[in-house]
Amino acid sequence: MAESVWTPDSWRSKPIKQDVVYDDPKELEAVVGRVANLPPLVSSREIDRLRAQLRDVAEGRAFLLQGGDCAESFDYCNPAAIEDKLKVLLQMSLVLIWGMRLPIVRIARMAGQYAKPRSSPYETVDGERILSYRGDNVNSIDPAQRRPDPQRLLAAYFHSASTVNYVRLLLDAGFADINRPEAWDLGHVRNPEIRREYQAIVNRLTDALGFMEVIGATSSQASALNTVDLYTSHEALLLEYEQALTRPRPKALGEAPRSAGARKRPYEPATPPRKALAPELCDWYNMSAHFIWIGDRTRQLDGAHVEYFRGVRNPVGVKVGPTMEPAELVRVLDILDPDFESGRVTLITRYGAGKIAEFLPAHVRAVQETRHKPVWCCDPCHGNTTTAPTGHKTRSFDAIISEITASITIHRELGSRLSGVHLELTGEHVTECTGGSQELSHSDLPSNYQTFCDPRLNYEQSLDIAFKIARVYECEREGGSP
Image (cartoon, rainbow, N blue to C red; front, side, top):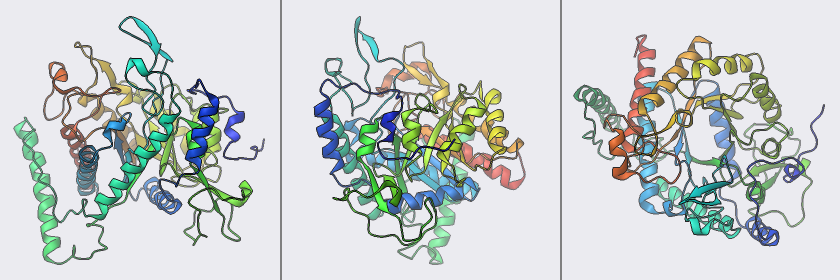
């Protein structure tokens, strides 16, 4: 049966999960109308560039690194927090480039990751049943301010805009220039053998960079060594907000409806045109971020989120876990990727170290029987969350590494390839996950446990992940075993 005509608001005719109910619908309408008349946060050309790069990832010519906070707080919109997150993603990507000998596509979970799906609309705090915290763009972590507030959508827009602006400023000012990298302090690595292994990689990296500088390979201002592409992403949960930032770009004359070619485009308006264009005459871009994804709780085939996602030109992600049947996965791909575009969809698998061997092979085989060519990306964090004896929600570094290496192995054995990792991390020195080269234990968690949502890998553990992955792929290149 043919799909119905898509429009930016056609999702409203579908059943919706994780919806937010506001006390004053008219206030919500006024706020969303205000957002719809504000400038976009990213450009369609940047989105198209990411589409092309994810095509390379899907076809084995690049690797995806996606990472950031579980849920951003408005308080994270400050220079230090943004710089720390940018630094760890850049250093991780440099290690991965060295080990894999592939370009790294960097996508940050930032500048919009303000909403959080919840398993229940209510929670109990100090014996009182109150509304659950749904993220800073819905309500406050403060139990006394849990009423959903439409004005927070406007605040989310401006915090996102400030974050995007500062990231652009940093990259333009040479923050990513690896000709003068920040010091690689490995003092946190307690195990002497691991420290020697990491230091050997760092020494080879710095020697290679020094050699390139001597021969003039880093002198060009346009060199990829002087700057990088960094894209933003979030889970597109609140569809009223996403629709408000969904903007049309007129199709070029004679252009095929879903062409992925890099043809020159007409001028794109910064705000919706005064005279609305027919939806079929436009390409529609979600300009709240470069990349958006559907969560595990909102991927219903007949649901509002899948309906919205199928019509936007952005590359999109889908969380895939143990509850997804292989046939359902194929149907999701058929809806979101009807033209079989390489890299259009990123499958973000999240099983848990103890379940990946049971579920991933069937999902890979099901996709292999189709013409779809998605990016296979491993989220090793969500399926490995436990509660420590201290009462803190935590994750084991060893379990995270186990899921990543199992994913690499399973894909290889099936003639597929793991093409990326999706990590919940921070550039700060928090103590929320156990293990890693710092050898953090459950007793260390209270010392600097800051998350108000899910536990994040800290700066040192994030680099540990990059070193481990780089080592696996370096051994693969050299024909050995890690």
